[in-house]
Length: 255
Image 1 (cartoon, one colour):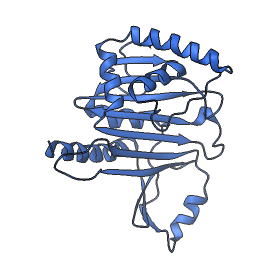
Image 2 (spheres, rainbow, N blue to C red):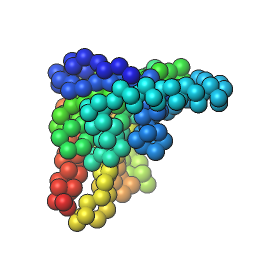
Image 3 (tube, helix red, strand yellow):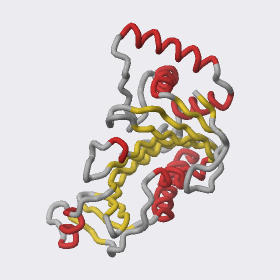
Image 4 (tube, rainbow, N blue to C red):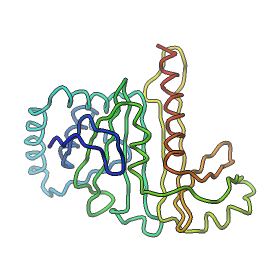
């Protein structure tokens, strides 16, 4: 594990409070220690160590080194990953070659109290491998901007908003979905803990598609009907921010 410099991520002016760079095995150890072995979605881990005995020995060596260097900032990060208030998951790929690992985007972000932590998988030789994981801490309100900044840069799509009924279809949809996207994926926002006074879990998801020569669209579905809207970076951040605020208000009202 290495702690990185406090500088903004590329394309963003948001300062980083803390940053960690983990090898794939270091991050697996972190998850085993603090998340009962569960890797956060959408991340993947495939060991390159062939022998079970060698893997166990290396795992233990890494565990001692990692936990031995943990400080208060590390503990806060690990605690947020294990018990967050809000989770945002982003995954993306290139429709022209979905198995091209280097075109994939895997992000898991969490918000807890006044902090947020954004984790990015550094893709390896396949979509099942990684070469490491980057974790960065920001102030909580910056989470939407940072997550959207992890997606490929793209302006808003130019088509007017239109709706698609899954039972009947709609004329504008044919050309839209027949066009192979240079980038596509999903965003999921999830309330991660229960409120004592407000039952249930609040969550939502949406698909994003980048059309060549056009721009980015957000596809939101409700009761078999989908709405397709062109969005730029600021608009997509605003959509995420609105849902995160709803979840935080829900949690605050139940405490």
